[in-house]
Length: 226
Image (tube, rainbow, N blue to C red; front, side, top):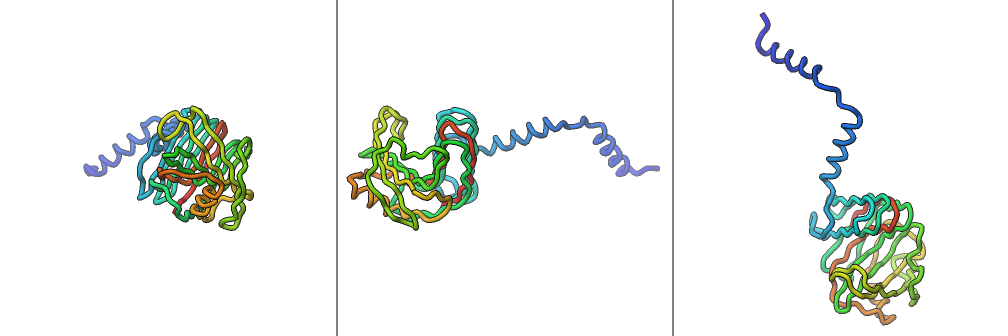
């Protein structure tokens, strides 16, 4: 006579054979659902002791994920415009170290990125970029030697553009590294001092992140900030 435990095992086995076969498409859909559930929604917040910001105008497909400590990943396809990354709030003249991968296909920037208020300023210390040099159309102010490289300094004015206080007019400050890199140290205070030298004054610090930005492009990044 068969034991009850044997019958239970046999029934489970027969049930497994009787289950419908899962297609590749169903497995892919399940995988996509799992990844989607891990994605961070647009907005701001804190994660593992770091501040993060994720802005998108809703164009294309953009995924941003917070990772361990100061890490994050992005993936974008035919995006409109997005900016996402991790750092601090408020910003300061700190020294930032970062590492990782930045793989754009088209127009994208990897920068120390932040805002101040009174005056309202959007600033970039751009370490690398894709096919489009963001210096195009900007007003050149001078140069800075810092952290083993040369940065060209620019300014520009934005009118009726998105900002941290809504649609507004504001100034942009740029330091663009002449030799691209992905990974290293950025002594932010050197840039603040150089901007001040050229009459580019900052206000009260808001947030400051190491940001991936894409504009009408595709690509991916995996960055760790410390």
